[in-house]
Structures are given as structure tokens and as C-alpha cells.
Image (cartoon, rainbow, N blue to C red; front, side):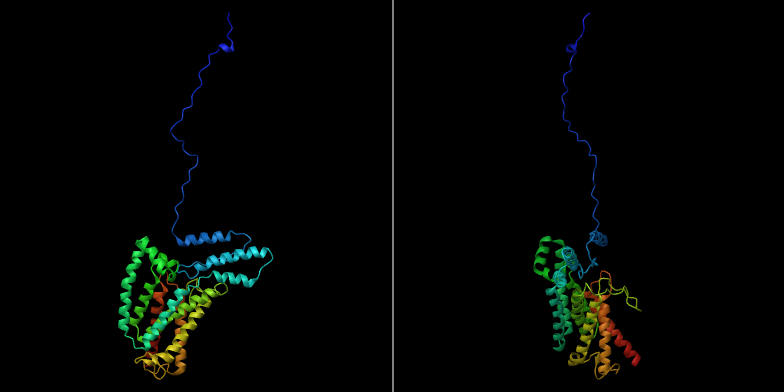
Length: 342
């Protein structure tokens, strides 16, 4: 009887591992969620991120579509973050913090200079008896060049780079992705010149040129301390833009009143057929004649300027709406008083 030992046990040959060309499915797979283009949702996300900084006094700023406040967001955030860091180390000078915040504000100086210069050009054309029809024709001719250039800017990246390199310093960041504000500006001016009396059209353009500039400048200067306007105009219940400040509203109101006072008091009489005069009042009817009447006209023009500049009209550009609304309201006020007086 033979005994089988372990050495006698047959040993199977080792198995060779073969590589498989098939790839096993991943345990986890991630699908990136599509980014929505809703600007409101992005604003909410931005606010949530800003609030997540615990222990840091971050000021939440309303972000607007027209660019008046969006330039301030970065400055306010950096100002608060630097203030928190310096404050933990022993405070810091308040004036230096305020200077830092003001330094971050984009004052848009080239744009505002161009915006304001239109008012001086308008006054020159008025006192020199410029032909209104010729001015309107020139502006329409300019649109025939500007509008195709704007369309080409949206369809050619090469032309867009050239366009913004040459004229980008006059554009807001929001306008680089939308219609150029110059187009709305010319449309608003042409509407006023075509449908309003010459003196009222001139005042409407001056309000657009100077009152709008004053509101933007003063509003940015006091954006951190000035209260916001209410949601609606008292009594009239007209919607006001939530980004607008009381400081900007007062600046537009004061500028509009000064425009009416200076124009109808000293400049308008150089031409015949004015809508209001010191001697004859509104349309020669005697209504609101004299300096007391001019004071009333100036106050009305000022309030109209402030409200028209602060209105919330959705996506409508204020370069278009401001001269149309301000000129239309002043003309309606004159017509109503003329009817009552007669």
C-alpha cells in the first residue's frame, strides 16, 4: 500500500492574468448642472455668498442692470473685508476706509463729459437760431452709421474688439452686451425735437444732459449713506427704481429746476414764439407770468426731472425715456394751465 505524499499532488499551472479592454463603469458619475442665464438667480447666489462670511460686516448692495450700482459692488466688498481685517488688529482710520471706498467707484468721467457736452451744444444751437430740421436730419444720419455698427459688433468678435478698443471708454460694462446707449440718446433727443416746441424740447434735452449726470454723480458719491427711494411715488403710485437713492433724486430735482429757471428766465427770450415768457406767461395767456410764475414753472420742472429720472420702466433706457417724459409732462402742464386760464 503506497502512501501519497504532498509532493506527489499534481500542481496546476498558474493562471495568467489577461488585461481586458472593457472599462468598468465608474462608481460615481457627475453631471454638471447647466448654468442658467437668469441674472436674478445669479444676484441671489451672490448675496448668499456674501452673507456666508461669518464675523465680517459685509454690506449687501443692490445690483442693477444699467450699471449705476454694479461698479460699486467690488469696492464695497473689498472695503468691508479690509476694514474687518484692520479692525481686528486695532481699528484703523475711518477716513482712510472711506477714501478706499470712493477710490473703487467708477465715476465714468469720459462718458459724463460727453453726456454733459450735448447740453452746451443744444444751447448754442438754440441761441444761434439753428435749424431744428437740419439737426434732426443730422442725428438720423448718424443713426444710419451707429446702428449697423452696433449690429456688426454683436455678430463679429473681431469687429467687437476693435469697436470696444476705440469706444469702450465711453461705454458702461452692461452696454458691452446690449444696445449702445448712444442710440437711445439720439432717439430721445430726436423725439423731443420733432414733437415738442423748440424751447420745451431744449429744456428736455438739458434735463437729459445735466440732470441725469447730476443724479448719477451725486448718487454714487453718497450711495453708502443716502437712503433709498420708496417703491412708488406717493399719490401717483408710479414705480421707482429700487437702486435709486434720495441723494440722486434731489440732485436731479435741483438741476432740473435750475435748468428751467436759467433757460426761461434769461436764454429763451432770444427767440420768438416761446412757450413761456416773463411778460406773457404760458403761451401768451398771462398764466404764471412774472418771476413768481417762473418760480412755479421751475419747481414743476425740477420735480418732473427727479421723478422721470428715478422711474422704474423695466428694460427701457433712461436716455430714451427721460427727455420724452420730462418734455411731455412740462408741455402737458402748460397746456392744462392755458386751458384753465382761458
